Image (tube, rainbow, N blue to C red; front, side, top):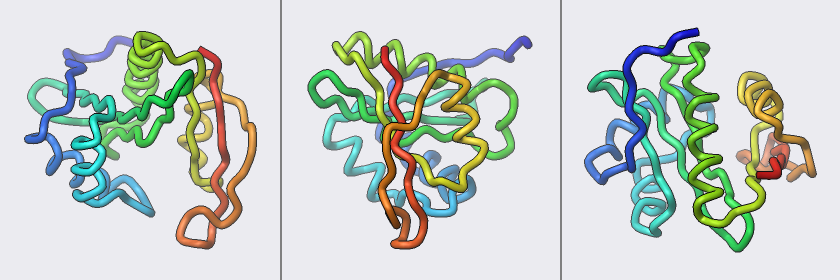
Length: 147
């Protein structure tokens, strides 16, 4: 599969509104604009994916010792199922390794079949669960990938 022209760039403060708008469309339990702002100000490794001039995805990592915690990875609904998620995830693996991480961990909603399929395809394995993690109703599956 051939992907159109794209760029992977560090997230800027001017990207936060567009990321928050995508988040609202893409998730049942979306981050708020404030969540993005807090993560950005905390200095987390934040990246955007642009197709041409359009922001179509983003990923945020928090480094903690040998672990890279994947806080959020999202592709705009209209750009999904075209290989962008795996491309962005591969980039985040590279970023995590550059920061000295040996493992990436994440939590994913147990009912998010598309994300679970992507993570399993990328080599993540379930290592645990957080009961009623999402809105006190739905479990989170904790997954890890050795880098």
